[in-house]
Image (cartoon, rainbow, N blue to C red; front, top):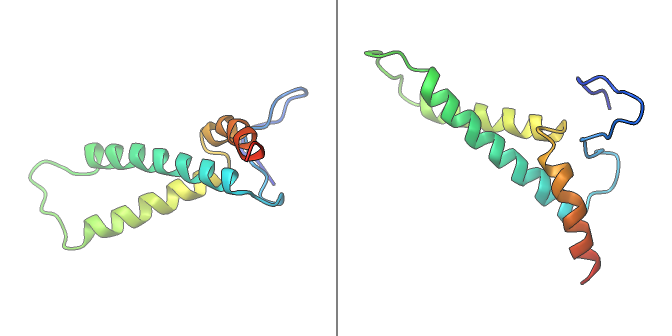
Length: 98
């Protein structure tokens, strides 16, 4: 998988490789990170997208919601902010205890 970030020797990868079979923990960690990124993007969009006095277009909120969450899912699938990679080892240890 190509990463936007350059790889340095000894650098830890923050991406969860999609080629590896994913357990419930990996999927949950990625979805959790996607939700966090989506919440951040939604607040940024609401803050910076509208101009004072501008009329809103019917259905624009729905399209914005879909676009933001598609972007958040894509970012999380590519490693996002690395939150899922940090959570995954803890989830894996709890899954193996069952």
